[in-house]
Image 1 (tube, protein in one colour):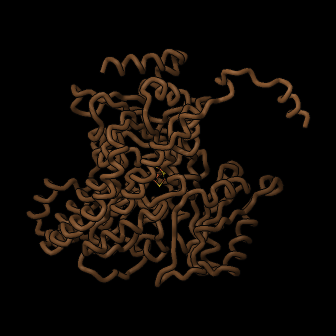
Image 2: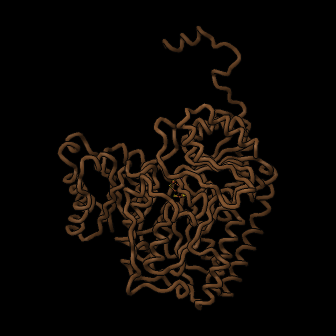
Image 3: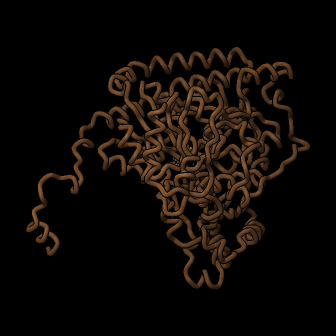
Length: 546
Ligand code: CFM
């Protein structure tokens, strides 16, 4: 413990006093003495000049939540760079199905108004309206999203009015998201903006309940590398009807019918907890935080779900699936474990994976000693019980909290959704943490570090001091680790691999991690400034003038 304190103190000493004071609040060392998680500062502005790993509100709204809806056209209203650089970078996979043919899937395409200087000077609303007309004529989409980037907020285009007029003109829903990049301190603000708009304007518009005894949604699952498909496979085998995976491979129609389910599962709490909570308020649908990353975590989530419905047949089928799948993958995992066992890792991902993947790493016998989020809020670290004590910050001042009321026609009590008596429901709540998330802290070990908005400097220092065997990173910090000779797995798009969720995902992940740990390549890297021999001056000259 003391050792870790000293390590951090040494890192801080390089900072000016004010920076040191600020950054100290974003780092917590887990100590046995602390029953509850000490307060960690999160979701506040990154100190200017510090190289952060965060994205912007537009990235959170467009890139994360709305663009994966496969049959909606999403327009980036802004300069071409915002659209171009957010095109195809997030691997939210989509495929045709019985309700969405191939030619109605737009999530792989990029649409932007390509704002030019005259548009910035004279306004871009006309250009946007014209683009919508062209898109409707060319593609006949079922619905359209408009996502604004920074300049739009600055020049004051009224995208709401453009969307309203277009809805009337074309008879399809056109939604406007004022998700200018600067709307928050990170992409987290964009999640909230998207959640609000979808909740207010899309969810509840449909009336087609899918057939099945137990109908569920998976909220906050974006089907990166096919993760959502693996979860659907498992859940169907257990006997569930998956109404909607929100928003990975989801269709507009699925989201209109989102309220016609008995239970909401929440995979990524950070990005979708608003909708889970608002659906509970408006419709009474209970939600359950699950984690389908990791074998034990998947098993535990499936068992908790089965308990919710108090259906012996469902429980039996769940146990059968767990037994069958575990037996199938165990022999292969056992081989990978030989290399993974005892290895030390860091995990720095956005707002939920640094917690989820600790479970999978534990399955492989690895331990995470430092874990951090780029943009999570205090509740993702400390648990939802802290929400009432969180001060309003830059984000929440910009984004309205919707104060929804129970829907007069559709609201039902939680126990009715699960076909339980009131008493059974109360008993269930004692056993299964409905409508709650305990955060990452309880899963960390004594002496581990939890760090918010970790920067390049801190990452380098932590690597030097704690010498991890492997690092799970973002798209930029990955290269810091690799240049230092440490293998890194990029955990946003999985370095183009995956799926990593569920049972099949566990095997893919174990194989990729084993490859990373056993390749000698990273140890062979010697940067030019550390090479012993003097560079050949003549050759260098020649190279420059060639
Ligand atoms: Fe949720 Fe995500 Fe994440 Fe996230 Fe993201 Fe992502 Fe992520 Mo990249 S929604 S918070 S904003 S689990 S895109 S699929 S990997 S930072 S940890």
